[in-house]
Length: 224
Ligand SMILES: C[S@@+](CC[C@H](N)C(=O)[O-])C[C@H]1O[C@@H](n2cnc3c(N)ncnc32)[C@H](O)[C@@H]1O
Image (spheres, rainbow, N blue to C red):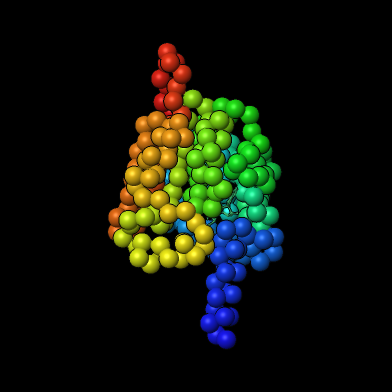
């Protein structure tokens, strides 16, 4: 009986992490803000954001990454397909939303409600495991990035990492995709990104991968 209850609880927790519901899920989104804070702060050290930059956080959860980006960029958009995540992100970013600098919408990564070439930067933290078709979804992100714009994908678990023996089985239980360093690099390249850079925090088993949308031929190089 105890095993059944423990399994049911694990499945319920897994579902909330994957897609936080409107009420209980908000609590999970808040907890994820806390538990992902060190990973997020580490990942953001690999990225410069110009003060005129427009950023998109995909799978924004409880909205802490939006808040961090909004402290540097001109405007930040967050999207998430879960009602609990959207509600929590909006609550956490109430002030910049009122100032018209932050926007949070309910949407799937597979169909981003934005014009082509709109963003300088997109971030995806601890979310890509759950996307329905990662390569196609990364192409959808490429569409909304400006030429030269960057996508950063961050995970606290990947195949071959030091913590894989522990997190690997948990992630498999959640039905999430397990990628190695080489898989990440190949995925970015297959989706059309250039200048792919991989950063690992080996002691913690974290990975941060950044790729750029190529500039059209003959386009002058302007880096932020
Ligand atoms: C583990 S949480 C991470 C949240 C946040 N990025 C963080 O670091 O705390 C995963 C988030 O991705 C969202 N998500 C998963 N699949 C998605 C999809 N296909 N489109 C949009 N959001 C998605 C979930 O709703 C959830 O809020």
